[in-house]
Amino acid sequence: MRKIKIPVELLKSFIDPGDCWFDHDGDCQGHGFSLRVDELCPQQQAKQILAKYYEKEAKKMTKPLSEMSMTEAVEKAFELLVYAEYVDKSTEKPEYLKYSWYSKFDGTFEEFLENHELKTTHIEDYGDDEPSTFDSQTAWEHFHYGTKEGNHDGWTAKVEKSYGGEGQGDQYWMVVSVSDGTTTRYFRRDGWYASYDGGYLDGDTYEVRPAERLVTVYE
Image (cartoon, rainbow, N blue to C red):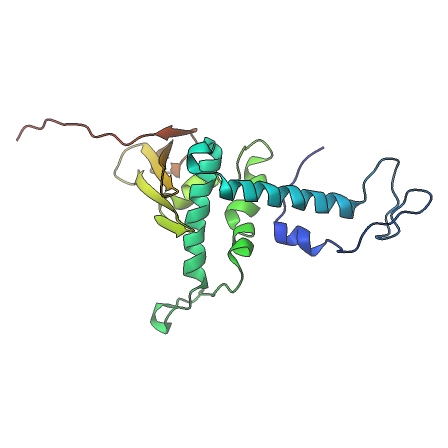
């Protein structure tokens, strides 16, 4: 069975708060579904999916950075960078800074996050095999030239360095950091650049550490 991902807010909009109740044939009369033996009512399934999602998000928020997997930490970094975009788009701008396509976002961060292009296009671009919504080629490329820092709830994420582009050869890479105020971790992804086609960050993500190097030059 092929899995699909849909925004949480969309799933919530289809859920009936009423309880299931079943007739003698095992069909859910509370929601009008005819069910096979041992089949759950779709409403019950949706509520279970939401409960697991909220449980996972709660654990992610309370887990210290030092205990996060690489995927979880990178997801957190990009979530913080998306939060910076949310702050920018939900803040009313003076008239002289408004552009023709300007539109202020009036929803919550959760709504902004769930409907962000990095989430909604994930399955279309990578199918079911990508282990993380945000640790994807789309996310890395989105922030290569985009938002450089995000702060929220004592956490900070930064694009420490992004390299590559016209006149810089075929190298193309980026390093992001994330900090919970106690621990700071750094992650890098490599790719390639071609003048006729642009840049792609299609390599694997791996954890790195900053290091100083002494370089000798001759003048």
